[in-house]
Length: 176
Image 1 (cartoon, rainbow, N blue to C red):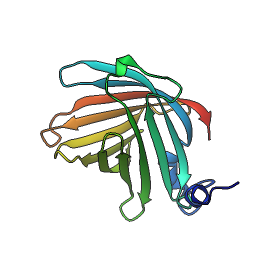
Image 2: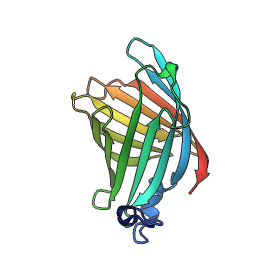
Image 3: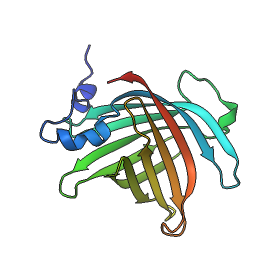
Image 4: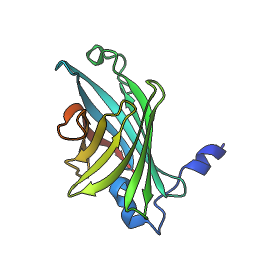
């Protein structure tokens, strides 16, 4: 039995007219696991293992992902404390500005973020402002065919200084 919603949402691949530009995030299509570290303002570190899944959506014109911490097969993790999330990002390429609109939603924690993402050298950098007025910067670096580093940073002084809040070290679990 097919699911009409899933059929309407999911795509088999990138839209051919945008395929080259869509490779920026398209290279992550598939399932990944990650080791997570959250650094609280007092220096306390929370750690755990999570999972993320990337797929083509909306006629192959966007990439959507689902981030889960702790991983569904990991069970409870005392080292995470209260830090958990189950959210999704919609990444849509905008040829008019040669950038990606990034929309993060985490209904479990009621945290939402909108950013613009672009390639910067061999990295992908997403920047925005959260609902507290703080600047946020999320980046992908150390990208290989089977791994990447995802870093979440915050600035309370309009980007003059940045504090690392989270780091995820991801490994490919299954290719696209």
